[in-house]
Image (cartoon, rainbow, N blue to C red):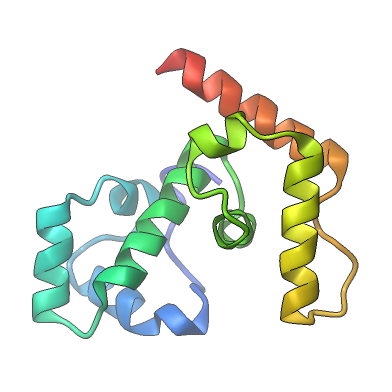
Length: 134
């Protein structure tokens, strides 16, 4: 996904945040990524959003925009402990597959792992390339 991709179909746990973001005129992942702490606090004060969830969404937006990940993949990485581009860039493919697979097993999804070594290696290469350009 790109920074211009619209915010849509966020997980159900973020429905208040999705509504508040739309009311504030934030409609794309790039706009969410660029949301400043001051604006985030204002959203929390005026709506039903929580600071915790908005910060999680902003972290997901960083991964979505920088690495062009699907929101579901960004959420999986974040919840597995890879919340930043730097964390992904310094990891090994085996570490990413182990931790994401462990998380999926703990959640009891019953589906085969989404992340394999090839995908993890690609994400790491993207993260490293992103670090050298910034």
